[in-house]
Amino acid sequence: MTRFRSTLPQVNGTTLLTDSGLETTLIFHDGLDLPCFAAYPLMETAEGRAVLRDYFQRHLAIASERSAGFLLESPTWRASRDWGAQLGHGPDDLARLNNDAIAMLVDLRDDATGVGPIVISGNIGPRGDGYVADAAMTADEAEDYHAEQIGWFAQSEVDLATAVTLSTVAEGVGVIRAAHRVDLPVVVSFTTETDGRLPDGTPLGRAIEQTDALTDGAAAYFMVNCAHPDHFRPVLDTGTAWLNRIGGVRANASRMSHAELDEAETLDAGDPAELGRDYRDLRQILPNLTVIGGCCGTDHRHIEAMADRCLGHNAA
Image 1 (cartoon, one colour):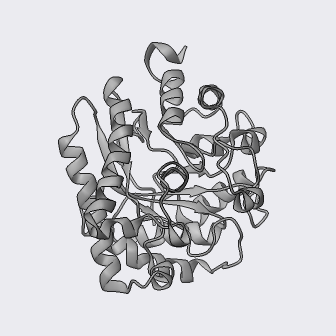
Image 2 (tube, rainbow, N blue to C red; image 1 turned 30 degrees about the vertical axis):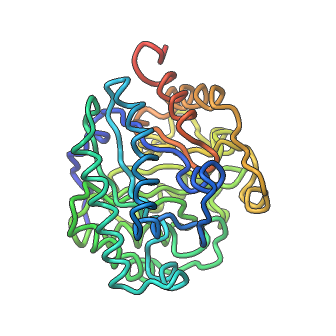
């Protein structure tokens, strides 16, 4: 396995906005019930598809107002074998729903004006909870599991696959190997606890270094998601080589831990302006940070604040 020579614009220095906390927006702002925290079943109805389209169009409008690029991330975080089984979907259903989700993003890309470039990503979630390393797999087991969804993406119009909220090196390695087998560019995004370590205790920097070592640096880049910047910023040692491999951040609005968020009955949306300033500061630390978006608790207001701090004349 060799390092993927990517032509993705974000790898080559183009800043792309992306969306915010899809599931928390749908639950807390739109009042929807999402069993298993899964958004992909909305693709089954015209009403559900309209909700998703409206969500993405709100975010695309932010990029359009700034003539910026955008990364469209499919609503398929839970659309894999084990989670699908819990929701009553077999492999044929999942293949169809994953494909439909990508087709929706293609339509959104084709209809968008004033936004460019637009990159389409097939979104992959963890096999397990994501916040607890309780379903730890070997790299081979992870490769076998994620190869199915990655295979569906490889037959679609995606530009890359992005696996988010991963909590172990082994799962990241498995995802990368599965994507490499079908020549699909891939990104791995780790989540951290409040101490900047993955849920299994691995320091963030070590996780990135180990994953790169075990895959010959085949990932296009790495990301951090589902953690507030205060949780991982202290471990971003200036001058450390692995910082160059972080190309994206999708932070939480809240400073609460994963355990606290799981128990929360109300949404902690934090302060959008403050989070925007956090991203401005992160761009001073992470030289290759080009993908800017949100995770739990964030919505289009947070993306606007990030854009105001990180794009154009407002970045100063």
